[in-house]
Amino acid sequence: MKTALTIAGSDSSGGAGIQADIKTMTANGVFAMSAITALTAQNTTGVTDILEATPQFLGEELDAIFTDIFPDAVKIGMVSSSGLIAVIADKLRQYGAKHIVVDPVMVATSGAKLLRDDAIAVLEEQLLPLAAVLTPNIPEAEILSGMTITDATGMEAAAKYISEKYGCAVLCKGGHKVNDADDLLWRNGFGKWFHGKRIDNPNTHGTGCTLSSAIASNLAKGYDLDESVERAKEYISGALAAMLDLGHGSGPMNHMFALKGAFTE
Image (cartoon, rainbow, N blue to C red; front, top):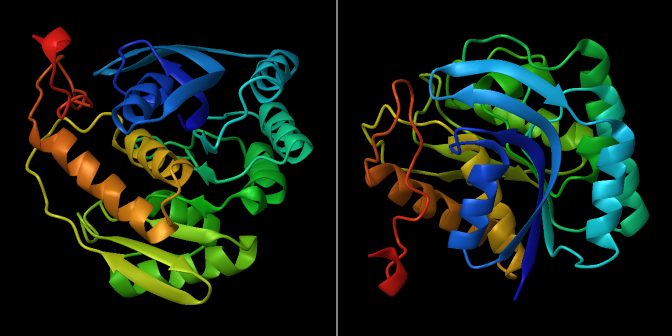
């Protein structure tokens, strides 16, 4: 069985973070492991508190994983401080990690920055160059490129710049009223659009975590990057189309929409 590791924060409500990652990886047929960067007290209406792991403890988590069950792919999500980012980069280099998918969680839905400027600098210098693919949304792509994105041409310009700067592929995700269901994959000097069907579902908690984890799962199984993105988009469309409705805010998706069997009844 292929394996995948998520390095991210915990979401106590189960809709995003490592909980979404583990569900996604399991649903996509790989064995999921996790290294927790932070505990969050949150639900569908917002985050009330965060308890960050120490860099030393995160390093111990990663040592435990890589020295026993080596992951076939790695997904990195919420990492809020420079010390944690530096440890992750060091360990990925030390163990020769492969198929690294970085979801650069930098901006909250409200528009507030989730990373301090010093942490952004370490992210850009140490972690992003290790990635096989980055999966920024529009606000994150604007920060990484220094550009304002208002249309498809802007997405292409930003993705090209980010890809060339960090030497990796970039999946610039539509949304934020710019090409809502269409994502752009830029690599090796060329762009490819992945067109999706907009699903009218207000419950979108954890979509970014889910997409990046699905991509990592498919890379772990041996699919190339184009196929991995295509399959991940199909998966997240199914999870949204299941129209799960839980909580009082922006609720989670049904990650297990395709799971059928005696134990689900």
